Length: 504
Image (cartoon, rainbow, N blue to C red):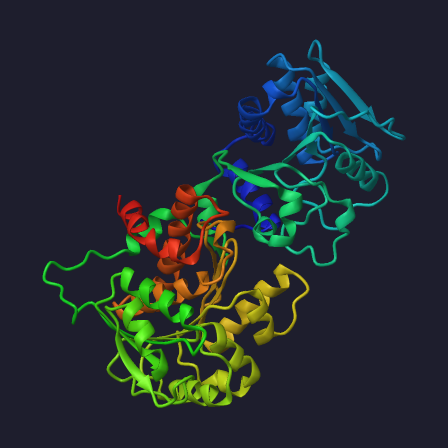
């Protein structure tokens, strides 16, 4: 699914109006009907009083149409239209007139000072002040209105975008003047800002409403932001050959763990094997041999000369993929071993955890990372690579530029994990849940990705499929165990169910 900017959404609206063809007022009616249907299903029965705050633009027109439809459905609805400049969007003006003409409607048109209505617990507020066209922070009376709404105990639902929130970059926004919605009903698709952690307190949950915008117009819009969809991931998943054997299903090398940190190695190994890998060899300090052969008897072990640390690099020329980093530490001898693995450039690599921290301390080695390698930082690890970021929008752009500059795949872990590609695309992953914010979850992802690479998936395929499967297994584990009780090994244990669900 293509993720559009605010400007591109307006472009798509105009394309739909011209090519469907449909009058803009009728397209607004279609959107308002979709919004009203959700409100009637989820909210209206529980909230005897509904208050709509409408701005002077298209978003306000949606709000006034929704107020009319709710009134027609028999729900007590009050609408406040802010028209302080005397200039309304034409469709907003039309919906004002339609609402005024409706028997039993309650509309207050605010042209100067507002006597703010008392908002009580149990009220439902519909925020339709500003939508995708906002280009600067709210101020003056509109800022006051948003603050009064936020101070109330009413339930708030925003139409398309919480008023005051920019669709993309909110780095320099006035966060005190942004509506804090319980839910946002997003028209046509999610807005980029919805996918960033710091904006969740404004967006709440969000629901995407399909109002029949032109598919042809959408395809014609050039973009680089995408949301992964289940069907495209399902198409990536390969059928295992009937005559497959362990020699044809990939042989991976996992370099992980040191004394006291063998849990990371165990999780990565178990995840790699559970993802369909034919053979796994592990490079470990020799004192860790008994631990790994007890915990993961399916793994082959190549021991380092050191008892406690990884200090040297094996010949990796006979492996189809190399995963390195979980639990290895950042000792200077381990750093040298990582550098030697990079110099070999024997096969596709997954670089995670301590390997990333070593690279951040030795930035001159970045150019030696094999092209199309997959790096999997969490936000703090990424900041150490690209510099401190003040917002998720800035972090996404720096990650994208990093992936372009070094011709690698950068998987920025988190809710809506981002996959930044060497071609400049950014793919957001929809699976996963807060229960996966637990130690070892990233080690599991490293094992999954390394396994898929070794099986012959292209790096772009492995990144998209692996991140999706990881999140899906986490979702299934949370359903079975609750988010609070989820631990990293539960993700591995639910990989079979994730494969089954994806296949079916």
